[in-house]
Image 1: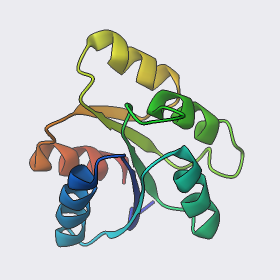
Image 2: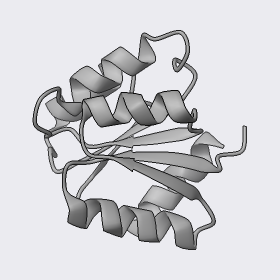
Image 3: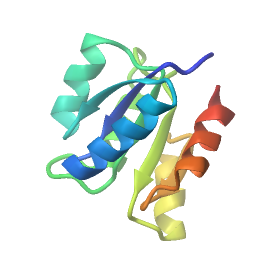
Length: 121
């Protein structure tokens, strides 16, 4: 499946701007959400081909949100890449157990992110 539409979920406006800019320059259509509630609203509007998920957010965190999305039959087929400052191996393992397909730490390396997205296509 070709990845064209990406939903970026992050509570940092700086991070959202950086990721949106990077993805758009690489030809992706980008939607953003700042929290779990926002993310589910965006999902209902238009199903993305990929979700980039922050972990540390107010309210429901990225691990919880990833689990909720991957267990929802409507969205279970949408791959999620955790994109977070949490760089411990235990965090990575936990993220993958919640249903994430991949895990990348911040600050995001643009080439690494593009390679991970390409690997999912």
